[in-house]
Amino acid sequence: MFAVLSPARKALRRLAFAAAMLGLAACDAVPVPGLGGANSGGPAIDPAKPVPVALLVPKSDAGAASVAQSLENAARLAIASLGGVKIDLRVYDTAGSPSTAAAQAQRAADEGAKIILGPLFGEAANAAGKQVIDDGINVLSFSNNAAIAGGNVFILGPTFDNTADRLMSYARRNGHKAVVVVHSNDVPGATGLAAVRKAALSNGINVASVHGYTLSIEGVNATARAAAGAAAQAGANSVFITTDATNAAMPILLQVMPEAGLNPAQTKYVGLTRWDVRPDLFSFPGAQGAWFALPNQAAQNAFEARYRATYGSEPHPLAGLAFDGIAAIGALAAQGRSDALSGRALTQASGFQGTGGVFRLRADGTNQRALAVASVQNNQLVILDPAPNSFGGAGF
View 1 (spheres, rainbow, N blue to C red):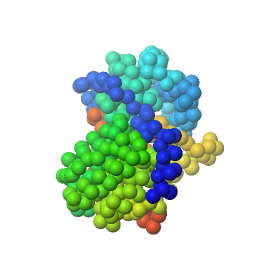
View 2 (cartoon, rainbow, N blue to C red; view 1 turned 180 degrees about the vertical axis):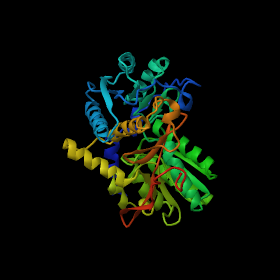
View 3 (cartoon, rainbow, N blue to C red; view 1 turned 120 degrees about the vertical axis):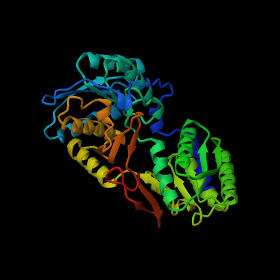
View 4 (cartoon, helix red, strand yellow; view 1 turned 90 degrees about the vertical axis):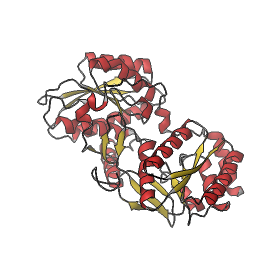
C-alpha cells in the first residue's frame, strides 16, 4: 500500500485534479434557440472558387502558442489532402482572450470568411459565436464543452456524453444492469457524473450509487472503500470511474477498491477517459479486464505519421480537431452545393471521415464520434469492439 500512496501523495501536490480537455471549457454559454444547428443557414459559397475559412487560434498566448501552431499545421495538412477542393485559409490570433476572439471573428466575417474554425478555448468560442451569429456564419470550435454548443456554434472536441454512451451501450449488450459511479468532487467530476447518469438512463441501466471523493489521499482512499462496499451490496456489474487517467487518484482507486473486496473478475472497472495514455496503470489490480473507449487507432496513427513526415514533430493531441474541421468543410464543398456550409449540411447524417475515424455534428451543436471499446488483458491493450466505420451499425 505504501508503494502506491507515497508517489500518489507527491503527485497530488503537483496536479490540480483538472482534466486537460475540460480546461478548454466555458460555463457562460448563451446559445441562441432556433437559429443554429440543423436549422441554421450559412453564407452561400461558390463551389468553383476557393472557400474562405477563418482559423482562430491563440498564437500569441504564451501558454497555448504551441497548440495553436499544431492546429494550424494540421489544418494545412488537411487542405493539402482535399484533392480538387480549394480552401483559402486565413489565420487570426485570438491571444486566448474571449474579447479578442469576438473581435477577430467579426474581422474574419468582414473580410469574407464563410465559416470559422476554432477558437480553442470554450469562452473564446462562445464569444466568437455570439459575435457573428447575425452574419449567419457557423463556428466549428475546438472545445469539448457541450454547454457552449448550440446556435451557430458546433464543438469538435470529444465529449464525455459520447464516451459514456458508447461504454454504457456496450455494457448493456453484455448484460450489465447496475453500475456504481466514482468521481471527483470538482467540475470535471460533476461533468463526468452527469454524462454517466445520462448514458445509463438512455441504455436502461440503473445507477445503484454514486461516490465522490475529496482531493486528498485520505479522501480518495475512503471513497474507494465505500464504493467497493456499495457495489458489492448492490450487486453492481460495473464501477464507472470518471477520473482522468493522468490524475494521481487513479492508482489509489485501482489498488484500494480491489483490496476492499471489489473483484475485477466479477465487477468490471470502466474508465470514462483513455487509460492507454498511462500504461503504468495496466499493472494495478483494478485495471485487469477493465474497459475504456478510444478512437480508431489505425486512422489516428495514419494522421500522426503524416504529420510527423510533413513537419518533423509530433502533433499536439488536439491537432486532429483542426484536420477534422477542414475535412468536413472540404467534403461538403466537394458536393458542389452553394449551401455547403449551412447548419443542415454540416449535420448530415452520414458524417465525415476524421483523424480518429468517422464523426458527425449533431443538431444541438455537439458531436458523435466512433469509438472502440478497449480492455486491459495481461497488462496489454486489447480491442474488444472495434470503432464502427459508418453510422447506423453496431457501436452507435
